Image 1 (cartoon, rainbow, N blue to C red):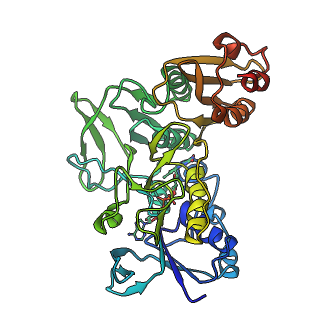
Image 2: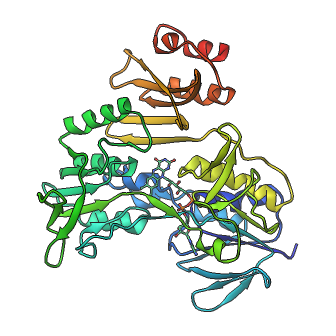
Image 3: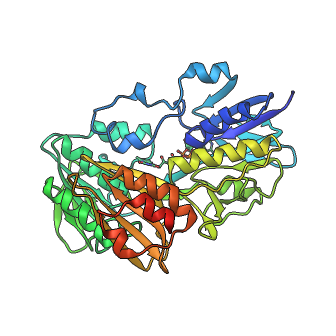
Length: 408
Ligand SMILES: Cc1cc2nc3c(=O)[nH]c(=O)nc-3n(C[C@H](O)[C@H](O)[C@H](O)COP(=O)(O)OP(=O)(O)OC[C@H]3O[C@@H](n4cnc5c(N)ncnc54)[C@H](O)[C@@H]3O)c2cc1C
């Protein structure tokens, strides 16, 4: 087969798509182009055990180089795709070179939202999306020094835990009135606030940075209320934006992500997209979603690869995520969109263990499982069946979860 598939982006989606293409029988050339200089690596450890120094770079590769070589998957790394010509079927690189494709996959992911305030350019003001960012943060770690984290989402809180482990005095600033506001209920937010506070982290909610102050490097964060916080390191974690501009420029539909169908296809029969950069339909929740998670990137990439090979493989997985902070693992099954009830089940068998069940009109739609893998497995298995359960039984740890959810 004399055809070429170009994948833009070498991360979770790009790596999986390339491998899945071979599994689906693609015999042509596979070229993965990415502006990152590394072979695809796991991003989750960047805020967790890589940041805390418990894991090193070499262990982060998603697949060893030899696996790609064996599958004849080629990489062009440290190179940005600047333009696409749909009529000519070429991608254009920064150096002006044009490379032809027969099939094209966007696995372009997302990039961090910048915080544009005075002093934003100072050395020591960091973001966290890729290896280079994580290495820059590590270079600014001063045991006993002060770290200010802006944004109490998962990345901010995971980084707070990692920096605390390394002996930094950490302060987290959150614009909203509680942590994890966008993603969890108050009961889960309160759990994590307590966890961090007990570990020595200071959390300021309803609080925003006004400017970063320093000579050559950041020394202080000035808050909008006039207060000053000393800072050897600042980490801004206020969210991401999908890398969808290239797709938009060639006329593909974009709506908070590149719009694809359940087979990861765009409106162009030769172009697919997968991962953080897509907005895709989800039958369970009944609308288009853009997710930021490794399982989403990998599962959707498999559908995209099948589509390239002319096979319909529906992507319709239950969204799931995880977050590690200190000795706590949070596993999230489903999305808690528009929930109207939260039911908490404690697990007295284990420290720091509970699950918050999210219900909408009596149906379980999501679960935040804290150090509770058994509940997570049950949630992942049964939420797609939309169980309707008695809230009192759901809260009662004496009631067997699997049986309860199965009957619902
Ligand atoms: C610190 C951190 C911790 C995380 N923790 C978790 C976790 O615990 N659990 C979880 O499920 N998820 C986690 N995530 C999210 C997860 O990493 C993402 O959902 C996942 O990386 C998405 O993969 P992707 O391949 O879609 O995109 P990305 O990983 O964003 O990769 C896209 C790649 O494409 C490149 N690219 C974009 N445009 C171009 C272009 N024009 N030319 C060339 N290259 C281009 C980008 O530079 C990037 O390298 C975490 C993310 C971060 C940053």
